[in-house]
Image (cartoon, rainbow, N blue to C red; front, side):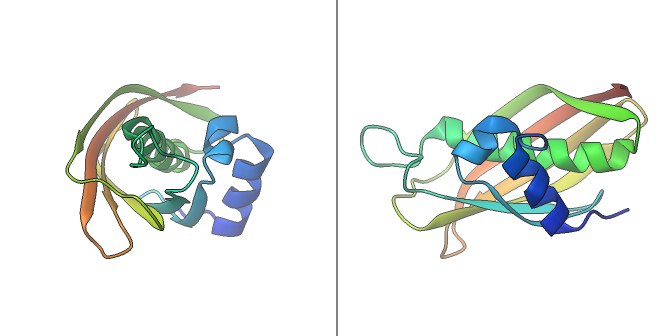
Length: 138
């Protein structure tokens, strides 16, 4: 099952899919299916006081992508909620965009776990995250 990226971007902009926070961070969805979700966001506007990409912004990107994949996997009439996330920040990013690619580790009926790799414009790994979502009836 796949959802058209344009439709999901409309959901993000409405504050429904990635929520208001994803919209504020400039999250742009590039690809979305139950097997792979890709999105990006600008570094500018998402930095900490030293001008580096804020680690929390990386976590928002990761959780948004994994949650969208879980929503697609869960199907109509079900909701997905993040219950655990961790992140390892490998290097800083100071300009351009970062891109996250979420791939499932496990897709069950009630839990889905995703690995999310975030890279900079040169393809260098900035962050590795893992997210687990609980899925239940709406």
